[in-house]
Length: 259
Ligand code: ADP
Image 1 (cartoon, helix red, strand yellow):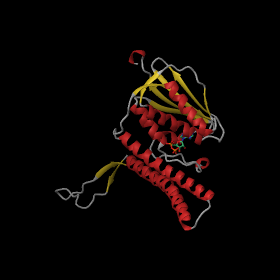
Image 2 (cartoon, rainbow, N blue to C red; image 1 turned 120 degrees about the horizontal axis):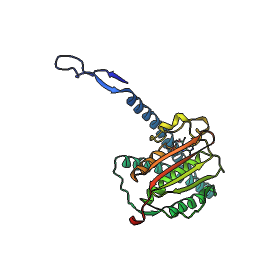
Image 3 (cartoon, helix red, strand yellow; image 1 turned 30 degrees about the vertical axis):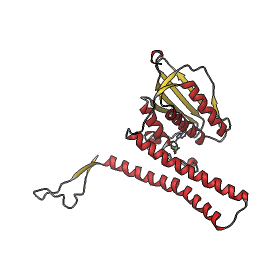
Image 4 (cartoon, protein in one colour; image 1 turned 180 degrees about the vertical axis):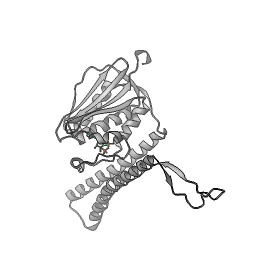
C-alpha cells in the first residue's frame, strides 16, 4: 500500500510542482511499532534496574547498616547491574551480527558434549528441571561453540521462563546423515498464532496477561536467529497455545571426511 507523504519545504521541482515521496506504509508502520516496542523495553528494562541501584546505594550512603543488610543491598545492586550489562551486551551483539561485524570462531564441535554441558550447568541453577537423555550422539557440527551455547541457552531460558515453575523442559537432539536438530520442548504458555510472524523481531515480546510479570527484552530469539543464520542453519518452532512449545535449531552435520 502506497501513500504520498507531504512535500516538504524546498522540495518543489523546477516548474514549481510538488514532489511527492512515496513510501510503503506497512514499512513505516512496522518501524513505528518497532520504535514503540523499543521504548517500552528500554523504559522498563533499563529504568527498573537503575531505579533499584540508585535507591539501594542511597540507602547505603544515608545511614550505617548492619552487616546482613549491607550484604543484601550489595547483592541487589550487583544483580540489577548485571541485568543492565546483559541487556547492553545482548543489544550490541545483535547489532554486530546483523551488520556481519561479529567475529565467529568456527571449529568442529561435538554436539553431544556441548548439549550435555549446557544442560548440566542449567540444572545447577534450575533445580534439575532440564531433562536430557544422554543418548550416544556421535555427530559434529562446524560451529562457534560459544555462540552455539548462547543460542541453546536462550531457548532453554525461554522454555524455563514461559512455563510453570517446576515443569520439565526437555532437550533432545536428532541426527540424520546431513543434519543435526537440537530441540527444546516445554509444557508452558505456548505462542499465540498472531505472534508467530513477529516472534524473531528484535524487541518484540508477546503481550498477554499471563506473561506481564515475566521480564525480558525481546532480544533472545532475534539473537538465536542470527546465530543460526551465521552457521547456515535455521530456527523454527511448533506451538500449542496453553500447552507448550518446541523450538528446533537445525544445523548442518559435518561429514566424517571433514573432521
Ligand atoms: P523475551 O523472552 O526477552 O521477551 P525473546 O525474543 O526470547 O524475548 O522471545 C520473544 C517472545 O516470544 C517472548 O516475549 C515470549 O512471549 C515468546 N516466547 C519465546 N519462547 C517461548 C516459549 N518457549 N514459550 C512461550 N512463549 C515463548
